[in-house]
Structures are given as C-alpha cells and as structure tokens.
Picture 1: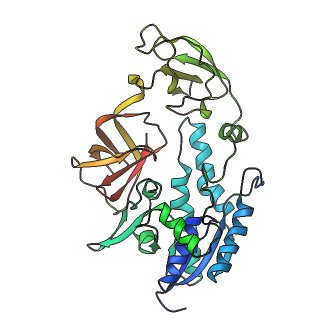
Picture 2 (picture 1 turned 180 degrees about the vertical axis):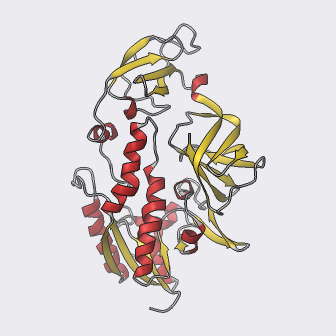
Picture 3 (picture 1 turned 120 degrees about the vertical axis):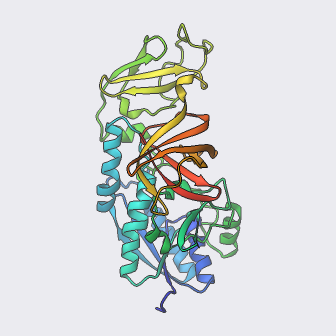
Length: 366
C-alpha cells in the first residue's frame, strides 16, 4: 500500500457507494470495500435487507476488482445510537438516529477501523462535499440539492473531515446511475433505501411498541381542551403528525379558525399527564415558531459561528433553508431566531445552520 493512496469505502449495497468506489479507483486510489452490519436484532428478509445488500456489495466488488471486508458494529450501534434513540422517544422527543449514526458509527468506529487496517482516507456515497479552506476543513452542500445530505453529517468534526472523501459531491443522482450503468454495475437502477437504517420499511409505530410499551391516554383539542379521542402512547407521535390520529370526523373547536373538516395535527405532547394535544388546520398558530433553542451543539469548525450574523437553517431534512440569526451562542446552547415562522419545530430533531453552501454545524432542538 502506497502512503496517502489507500481508501476504505463504506459499501452499502446501493448505487451511490458503488459509484463512489468506482470513481476513486478511476482516480488511482487503492480501494478497499467495507460492509458494515449495524443491526441484527431481527434481521429478517421481510423488512431488513442487509442480506441482499451484502450480496449486492460482493457483486459490485467483483465487477470493480476490489477486496471487501465485512464488519459487525451492532454492539457499538446499540450502545451509541439505539439506546439514545429509545431514551429520547421515552422522554417525548423525536430524535434523528441517522445524524448520530454518522457521527458515532460511520465516521468514528468505521474510521478508526479503517485507519487500523492501513487506510489513509475513508469514503462514502453521501451527497455532500468537503474541502480545505484557510487551514480548516469545511463541510459543503452537494451539487444535487434534492439529494444533499449535509444535514445528516453536520456533527462531523475537523479530524473526521480531514480523513474523509465524498466522491459524489459534484454529481446529480441521474449522473450517478448513468455512470453505474456504463460500468456494468448491476445496482445501477436499484431502488434507494428509505426510512431509519435499523427499521427499514417496517411500520414505525409497530417497531417502537416492541421497546416502549403502549400507554393509553387522551387526545385533546389545544384550543378548548375537549377530549377528541385516545392515543396508544404519547411517545409514538411527533409534532406536526397528521396520519394515524383516528379523529378525522371530529369538528373544529369553538375558537379555531379552521373549517369543520380541516385535518388535525399534533401540536404538543404532555408527557407528565400522558396527553396528546392537537389542532386543526396546517396553518394553526400553535404549529408555527419564529425561534427555537438548541442544545448539544456541534460546530464543524470546532467553534461557534458569530452571533447576530444572518445565516440560514433547517429544522428538518426535507426543508428549504430559512434565513435566521443566532441570537445567543453558549458552550452548551444557543437561541436561533427566524425571519419567518417555521412549521412544526420538533424537540429532539436537529437544527442545522448554513452560510451559503457551507454547513456550519448545529444542535438538538430543545
């Protein structure tokens, strides 16, 4: 292995990581593939596709002529990601395990393992970019804005980014599939995986009920405190949720601006009293917030951005960047004020701050 020339690519069995490996090999890197198994509690073919993914990884490796190592990080995942996931849901918050998986597993445990076996860099098929600028490493949005995954990577630090390559930074998804097809990779048209990594395609509530037992309680209208129905557990619901409430036929409250048949949305979760509060209408004021506080902060540069500068931020992945100012920045918390109210700001989710194409980092919504 030549110094500075060996890269370990995290192969998932999908087209993105396969093309990442292909591009690096074409650039002259000595490429080693690594398949991570992070979940094994109920790895069945019905919902969890890791067995088929491994078959696809081996096929890709054979086509590219690279070696593959299979590693099991399930115990690390359970300890560092899944335990936190359950604790947060039990507390009534809605965590984002994919954010934690990236910082704790893919760019920590995986990185450490890759360096031990002689790698100089690691690479993944994430749609994001990394560059060195004025002596520091920056995390960038991907060229393909519809696929940009910098939101999920915002907790990466300088040491992690210094060792990371994102070969798909400048490519659009359609180009990635075209490259895969031209190279004879059978995953060229493979459907993208969706949902949280360890849950796969299975019904989310059904999965959560196996770990957090049902605890029935009242669903109340926030406007007039009427009882509208019953829930199975506050933990199973999230702010802004519309489906699965089973109160569709109930008319609006006395003071509500919504029409009689407008949809109901979760607006508040009272954990102490086991009450789920709902409002009617997508634009109800209780679903809008022009500021938020965040904790568990993680800044890519190792230090917080300037207060009172104009930035943009996202409070969820599938959201347009919203202009904002950071009013106060402390060691453990900050206040972010938006130019326009944001919809369904959800405790436990991540707020991620940007300056143009540069992802500055973020924190957990309090």
